[in-house]
Image (tube, rainbow, N blue to C red; front, side, top):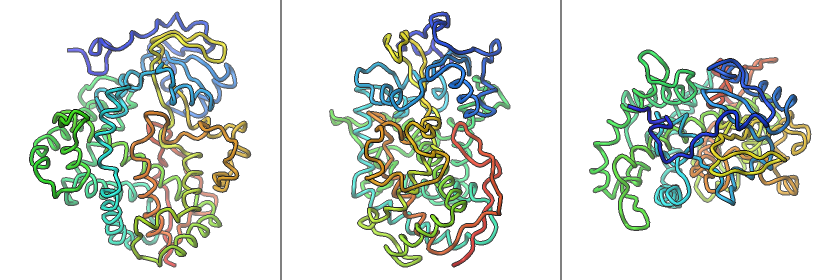
Length: 455
């Protein structure tokens, strides 16, 4: 049987462009069979900057079993993400990487099907449900963050905390061993997404990832009918179960499971990465940590709950978050497949070509950002943002596939920062500079060693 991520299992996909059809694009394919896979995994930014320096903003490379083109810069981001001419397939870009793990997730859909399901799933992000999530998060943060004191590893702690939020707000399940199993399943699935071994063989990352997916199918599936009948349950999963498309029909059980798998992964792992990078940068720049703390205290006293109406007041906090997302975006690379031939920067690129953009590199390009290596949240004020290319900053993607949970992410970040920074000062050792794993989602390799000092 053909793998779900293979071309054979997806006859509706546009056939891949033959490698020789891309020979006119500058670049290098690397070693036989493995291409540049290990060079990319070892240090993605270094590899990309090497390729840009040698070949320019459009270059060819081979990795993860296929030849693809990288398109670098804000103009490339706009071309692919806004996609005014419907040139690119997100399903066919992500599918070879994620179909074994997150098939039919919202990011793996195109055009009308994507629009219909996005509209149906949007019910969980309307004002009334969001007010409920605010109450849930205020309660969880007030209960758990007072335990964060002294020396600790931040990344595993925030990962567990965001899982607790996801279990409560997304699933409506009590914390405990069941939530731990759900977390392990998601960890295994995300790790498998960049496994060099693309078949689910025993004892491989991909094998563990597919096993995690099977666990979640068996977890979500049997609950759907009960949640559909119970209007009192307001968690995200229950709302997805009751969501209908424009024709009034429910999504099928398998569609709901696939959407839950994908959105749980997207919401859980990306916010974990984003809040970790923000805390790291605020600890590294204590003057900005103090500005954020002062703003939080001006909105509400330490330890108190934040209301939905107060969220817009976290102006400096939002600037700092945007700057953290600029410097360490949670999705470092975004792939698509070309559905037709197209022209870009003087090159004719044939249909069937896998193309990708790279937010990490664009976010550090001096042509868009003055002194890009410096942490400067004020670059996101309305005045300083004026005239900047709209697609120079794309941590949440853009166009039709703009992150559905964008406002949920901002909300969770603001509530977390208020509950934490009004009670402790986050410190790191002098000279401390942790190495970061860049792919599939950035995280500090040592877990980020911090000290929580009570105020």
